[in-house]
Amino acid sequence: MIDVINLQKSFGKIEVLKGIDITVNKGDIVCVIGPSGSGKSTFLRCLNCMEDPTGGQIIFNGTDIADMSVDINIHRRKIGMVFQQFNLFNNKTVVQNIMLAPVHVGLEDLRRAKRFNTFLPITNLFRKKGNRKEKIEIKTDPAKIKADAYENAMRLLGRIGLEDKADKYPSTLSGGQKQRVAIVRALAMNPDVILFDEPTSALDPEMVGEVLDLMKALADDGMTMVIVTHEMGFAREVANRVVFIDEGKILEEGDPKEFFGNPKNPRLKDFLSKVL
Image 1: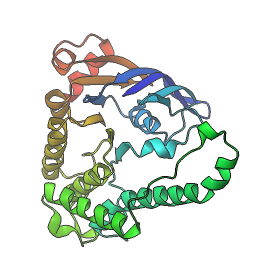
Image 2: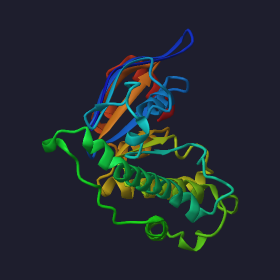
Image 3: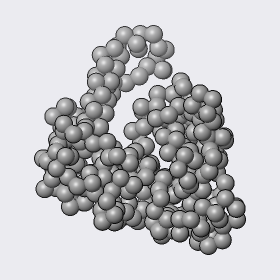
Image 4: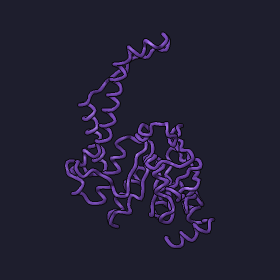
């Protein structure tokens, strides 16, 4: 699903990523660990081009999304992102937060289809007979797009037991509730992969479990996930691959049993001795 080839990222003269190579297959749960400042979050943000890579390739479903000529917004529809600080819109209710992206994309696609159909008779004049295109069949309208998004948002809130919070504002929720809403907001776009940037680090200890339980449920459902985390127990239990990044390079990766039980890189051994 994702092939990262020689990924590099610099901020001015500071080289943060120094040639990352990794493949993420469909259904993988990849946990990325490492010391603070090692480039973990920058790596994750490069995966959906929230940070433009300085060099290298990111092949997502066959397209190099690091290529500046590619419309990254089209591909971001299938790359969910969950942030450390939730990033919910405080002026919108919980259900409005979840509906926002699906409604925006649905209305944008509808406008694009209508525009295509409007100009089709003219554009077909310049095409050879065998190459003329057909009108796009439009089976929706703005009201249906919003109704479908609302129905899906309520279904997702029901999944995490927060349907009673649908009309509340994020400021009334606990940290764990906010992060669970942020996760189902990402799910509302039916993504191929979800990127998690330290999703539990801003939570009180007693709220960490409810977020990790939801992530475990997603893993059981086969969701592809790349997770930057400090939760070693979660990485050991849920990941099928663990990656150690330090000073902008992948120093070791492997299945959790071998990774934690028999680390080979001296820097990883030193890191694990301090966090386990």
